[in-house]
Image (cartoon, rainbow, N blue to C red):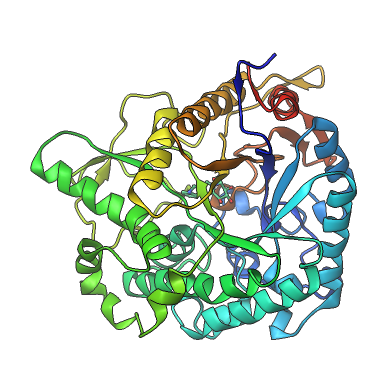
Length: 457
Ligand SMILES: OC[C@@H]1[C@@H](O)[C@H](O)[C@@H](O)c2nc(CNc3ccccc3)cn21
């Protein structure tokens, strides 16, 4: 029974990424990624865990697609492993064949594939040549996009260029909590621009013919801890670095002046070349929004810092010193992230109101909670409630005029949670890593029903 229906054709999906689920990191010609290197470096991932096996999805993909279909979801957002497709810069048909098989299996099951080209697993040889701080990497990404479009464009029509450029740039090159684990704000600001340039170069390639493309930034609602001038400015700086830097570039083709000013001490102005912003702000068919929580920001420098990994180290916020993240008094997930569905409504209506009109997808939303298996069942009522509340926020946003076209729950199944390893579980489906047994949690069955009825009770 649906009392809160969603628009006809709304895409109900689940999401994953290559390094987090595939395993088989040396199979069929796959090359090394920066996450293979990072995860095998002692002290980088909790308990020394890595993605060598992960969910063994590379061999179990047909079983996983069948499970997706049995649940009733209609769309699947996954990522392509660049080092599987172009190891050492050469096209690897063995890697492409896997994604051809995956896409064919999805289509046969009535599930629409949405492919992300970059979800953090840069080929190691490109990192060795300078990584995202090096402008050339953006051009190598455009070459990769042309290979992918040629090989998979007959099967995949919906593309996301880059997942969360903020994370790749600032966690990878400023805080060092993510691969490649560097701690240089100067490198981070260069990486941020080149990840967006990569998007700008690749999007026209992916949009050729009947291709549809966008990017998938992670956006947060941001509030000052108080109405003091210092807290208001701290919130401005974090909102600028986290949200406006990416939204302005992608949707207006320019960077916000205040953020450019804040980043000037790190050499940011030297990075942007003539023509870059026209490419970055070029036409897209939709924008993905990854939303999880709200930041409540204080100017005091001794407040709590949002833990981006168990080894949170240097700040991922160049230009935002003396800023702390404080809890706003809301319930938190197992990641310590505040549960705030109102923040999702806030972000969606803000993007719809303040930026040129573009269709939106929630490309990631979900929650980690500690799951308990009782007689083979997992009653993950907290995760179900989190998703229900955020879907209600989506429904309200649509009623307020937001052109929201779909929602992808993060994640289809438990997986490798980056610096946290396998201990943080976001899946609608439980994975026993000893046996690789998949068990739908109560949230999976509930979400599949919502998908089939295209609405909330
Ligand atoms: O952490 C859950 C997921 C993660 O598994 C996805 O691969 C990634 O796209 C993703 N992004 C966020 C939001 N941003 C974030 C902040 C700090 C650390 C990691 C991610 C959450 N998630």
